[in-house]
Image (cartoon, rainbow, N blue to C red; front, side, top):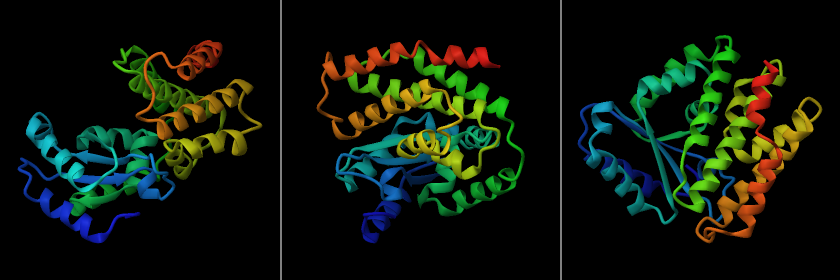
Length: 257
């Protein structure tokens, strides 16, 4: 795994063996630091897949988070899920789930992860039900719009997510066929922007190209100024004003179908 000495990964794995759990779990390392396209301000992304019994125990996630924070100087981002929900997301070809399984690397629970990969192998050759995937993404857009951000940083992340999901939904409505590789790239900000501006440039409305530019600006703001933005920053205000000019593209998506 990129930019980390083998001894560190070995130590992390050994310490996780001592975490008490009711059922097997695995932890994936993914994102820019796994792919190798990170910068100094990039955080380190992990995904924890565990049973519902373990998730409801605060100490379980806390112990895993502590192990990761003890071994890495970068900011740690740990998200979690259960097997059934992840398999459902794979079955509908949800980009983040595909990114995790296709591009993530297990740092603990290799055997458990291999079983999930085997399940994904049986799914990935099936025909994509685009309407089901679009419905799921539309619900996610509504969910993020409903959130009440507690800080400027949270607001940036929320808006970034709304924009990326809106762009992805436009692609799915406009492009006849997308590949597994393209779907996994939808979850990578730099590659999603490149797909819009280069690969799909003649097929998407001009508003989506503008939205992709705003998305790039937001992502860079999040990456390079993660801890430096305070509430009321003019930069954030200008971004919000730009987003308002798009006039709620999610409504436009609904009008297309």
